[in-house]
Length: 496
Ligand code: NDP
Image (cartoon, rainbow, N blue to C red; front, side, top):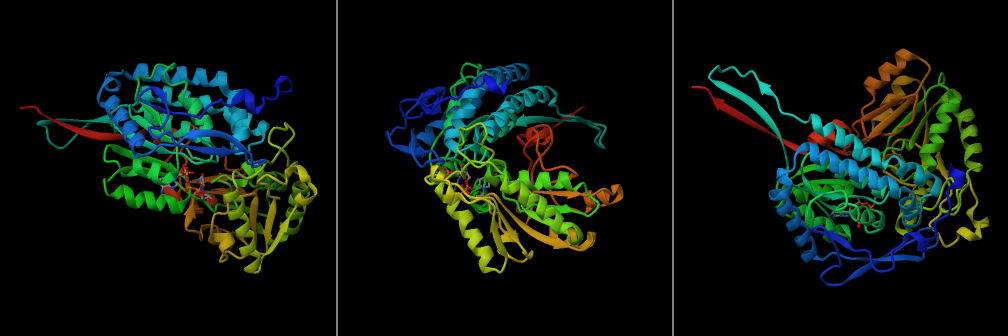
C-alpha cells in the first residue's frame, strides 16, 4: 500500500494565491489585505503567503460565530450535528494524503509519520459524532417533594480555539470536534507557523453541511489575533494548547470576562525504568519519545529515570539506536526524524543544551549534522542526551521541546517516585517494571494526568488527556472534552 503512494510536490498541494480566512462560511482575505509568510523548516524557503487578520477581521469572525449560535445552529438537531461531523470525517479522509504532504512541508514532518498521524484524524470527528448522541441531563431526587428537578446540558456559545504548531490539524480537530458536537460555534486560530492544513480543513466545512458562521478560521500571530479572542466578551470559552507561559497569560486575561478554559500546557514527564523491566521495550519508548515529531510533543517523557543497576546497559542500547536514526528531508519516506519547526524553536532548544552544560551535566549528541550539507539550511538538530543531570537543574525542570532527554539515576522505588513527582508539571508519567504490585503502587503514586505502565504515552481520542498542576486545566479527548464544552442548567419545577 505505502509503496504505491507517490511524492506530492509543493506545487501539487500549495495554493497559488495567499491562504484565506474562513468567516461566515466564506473564504475571505483580510480587510487590510495584509499577509504574512510561512516557511519550510527543512530549507528555510518561503512556502506560502497567508492573509493576516486584523482586529476588524477577528470582530467579523466572532460576530459570525455569535450570529450562527443564536441563529440557525441553535435549531439543528443532535442527529444532524452528528451527520455533519461524519460527513466532514468522510471529506477529510479523501484529503489525508494531500494534507499529510502539506504538513510535511509546512511543519517539517517526515512524510511517513505525517501520513500515520493524519490517517487517524477523521476518527476524532467520528468519535464525537457518536458520543454526542448520548449527551443528556439527569433527573434529580431532591429533598423536596413539591419539586421536580432536572438538569440540562447546554452548549456554551462561541469557543475560541487556539492551536499550536506541533500537530496543527490533529489538535485543531481535537478542539473543534467536541465543541461542535456539544452545539457550540467556533473561531479557530492556528499557529502562524503552521496554518495551511487548517485553512484546507476550513474549505470542507460548507460541503459537510455546517451553516455559515458555525466554523470560522482567523490567521495571524498569537498576540494580537489569539489574544483578541481571549478578550472578546462574546467568546464564552477558550481552549488553548501551547506553552505554560502563554497559558498563564491567557488565564489572567480570560479572568476579565470569567471565561471557561481548557488549557493543555507544557510537560516534563518522567519515565521510570526499573531493573526488572522489559528493557527492550523501555528503550524503544525512550527512543520514540526523543525522535517522534523531533521531540516536539507535550506528553513525551523527557526525564529518563533509570535504576542504577541497569542504567549503563540501558543507555548503551539507546545510544546505539540513536546513532542509527535516519535524520533527513521530510519528503523522503525513509526519514525518521526531520527538522524542528522553526529557527526560533531551534534556537530555544540549543539554548537549553548550553544551559545543561553550564549546569554541570554532560551533553552528548548522537549524529554529526556537519557531515550533512543537504540539511545545512534547515532547522535540524541531532538527538541529544543530557547525562548526569540532577532534578534541580533547569534542564530537568523546564520543557525543552526538542529531540532531547534528561537522564537521571535512582536507587529504589521511593526515590524514583519522589524525583518523578518533584515537578511543577504533571502531564504524564511512564513506568516500566515486571512486578505487578509495584506497577499498581506506581499507578497510584505518580502524580500526573496520564500514567502509563509498561507502555509509552500515546493519547487516543477516546481517553481523556490533560495535566495536573502547571500542565493545565480541563481535559482534551474522551467524553470529558465533550462535557467541558457544555454547561449544566438546573431546572426546578414547582408541582403545587
Ligand atoms: P505558544 O504557547 O506561545 O503558542 C501556542 C499557540 O498560542 C499558537 O497558536 C500561538 O500563536 C498562540 N499564542 C501565542 N501567544 C498568544 C497570546 N498572547 N494570546 C493568545 N494566543 C497566543 O508556544 P510557542 O510557539 O512560543 O512555543 C513555546 C514553547 O511552548 C515550546 O518550546 C514548548 O515548550 C511549548 N509548546 C507546547 C505545546 C504543547 O503541545 N503543549 C505546543 C507548542 C509549544 P502563534 O504561533 O501564531 O504566535
